[in-house]
Amino acid sequence: MSAAPPIPLTRYAWLSIGAALVTFSLKMTAWWFTGSVGLLSDGLESLVNLAAAVIALISLRVAAVPADDDHAYGHTKVEYFSSGMEGGLIVLAAVGIAWTATTRLMNPEPLEAIGLGLWLSTGASLINLAVARVLYRVGKKAHSITLQADADHLMTDVWTSAAVIVAVALIAFTGWQVLDPIIGLLLAAHIVFVGIRLVRKSLLGLMDTGLDAEDMAVVNAVLDRHRANGVQFHALRTRQAGAWRFMSVHVLVPGEWTVARGHELSEEIENELREHLPRLTALTHLEPIEDPASYEDLPEKREKPNGA
Image 1: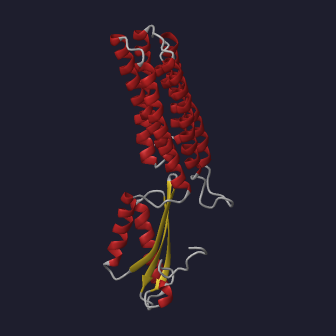
Image 2: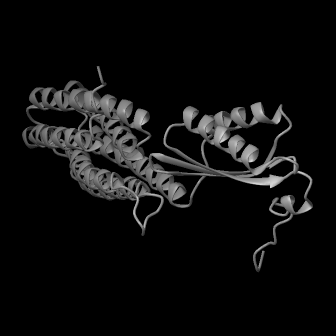
Image 3: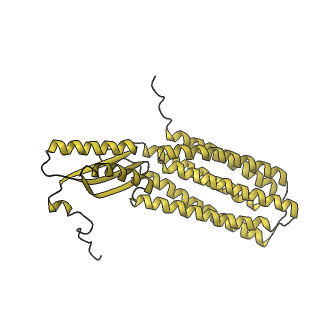
């Protein structure tokens, strides 16, 4: 009996969109009844969640397009644009939150219907928590930076909501209205930090940052098994492009080997790497170990660019 085909990642983007619509409605209703700037800031972040989820949906659709003549390595790098735009939207929302909180700090207003507002906000947070766990699990398994970024953002929203709920509850018990705008300003600062972190991660991906330490450990373990048989390697280069990984390495073997034997080894190495690291495009370049020209591409041998 064949296994069921995997669910398209775009389905999870639709799940995020639905959750954002529901939570935004709940939080803005809570703000409408209470007048809390903290709940308003929380609601505006859910609006950013909605925009980010729509961008994620578009990004995942583009990333799923197969490689073509103009994009021989596929379209998965578009996911970095998605997470970068999400980070920018988060920062923009934080500016609006800070502006509203500053205005309320100078002109405090009493909160109303606090109990209803807390129940609505708590319900929205539970929805975000459930969706974030699903997105992170799927994003981790599928190596989708878009879904993982969306999950991280939703978890930030969960913690933000928790802080707002505590603040509003304290106001209800103490009557300190100034706590509301202060919490709003603190949340704005926290949201800026999250947004900058997402933008930085996206920029690193667009700059072809290499594989992380965990993946590199897997690569080196495979190569070490062949080093034990007298094979050498150098010029190992890696990069990550959304859900796909890319690497190239030069394989140095005795010059007396036949082309067929060297090719068989290269195929074996590439297959082992792909077996341990799904979604990996591995390229090997065969060279004779005795030829000095084989080492011309080592870092210390390469010519530095002009001005370096």
